[in-house]
Image 1: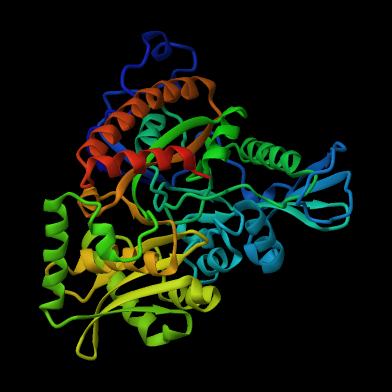
Image 2 (image 1 turned 120 degrees about the horizontal axis):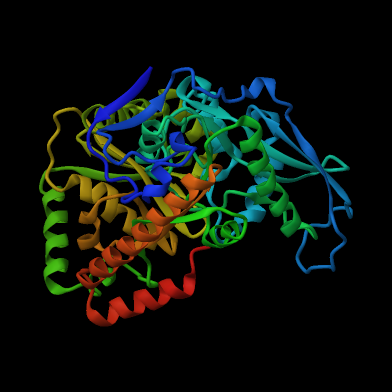
Length: 481
């Protein structure tokens, strides 16, 4: 069975005529197709490997002696590592996984989404499992003393939902040429468009070598499973650069983030904005207070089971009305809240004793991550969405002395509320050489368009001219770790 959407797609533009008529024509694009493939559930011409039938051992690798580094973990010197695949994150202890997570991100830029607690909550709640099209195939590297030196969150997928780097038109092109796009391998945090490290390696004498081995292991697995492609979405900028050297195509996207310029208060932040924008924000906040709504920011133990049950209702109201698919189950919120503790910040709006809306955030080392929003069905409270998702998040970041707020994917309306466009990254390993060449051409043109759009948005932003220059220089210095 093929799930399709009747809609024309520009996909990759002009395809050279000689590709259309080559002996491998089934692998080339048909730009006249009017169907967009969302997922494939039929029997493909060339059957992809079943994960259960493939050896889970990816090999043993010798490590070269390297000169000593400062600030590395005091593990015994190792000379060999073994790389394997596990079908559930539960097969790796939380402490081992999180040591890799902490070393990869650093304490200052700690990312809660790549922790064992968050990822295991997705699996244990049946949100990211085989039945939902996310088959865990996490890669683990161990030394000869059974110390875990690196891990990779990896999934075998039968669709492109919940990724936020859109490749539906790529699947459409494969299908229109008689080729199979699904399954594919996806290195990511399911349902989470948040930048952070994806190849999680302990800080040892062999960090760079383990990184290279893990990337090679992912590519080997892609060949073993006979998938069309391997995608690493929302990696750090440094990973993105390294992956280019290993044959991955580079793609960029755009999100909107708020930057904390050492503000002491929300009003101080407003003073950096143009007068008209400052006035608009103050008017929006007054609308909320005039509706007899009480805003609260709850963390850790302050968030009770009733809050999660009600927030799940909010979440379902949003998905049912906007997205059409609820990726997360009720159990996910309870599990995640229990495991992450004070890293969870739930912003709620109350009318009297009733919860009427909420916004879910996670607290990282230097960032507040805005994730989900929802409200009661048929509820209408002007400007409440802006208050709960953007202004309360800014106030919380100032209070917690965090560097920035990431407000999630999409939404140009965020710009006029102080959130600036920033670059996001993804890396794509396409196994078919001819498809890879065509996709590379498309990505080159898409990148130029994204840069142009970002430039235009920055020029029309809400900040005073001198503030815009300061923010841009700071962004260039930051580099996107």
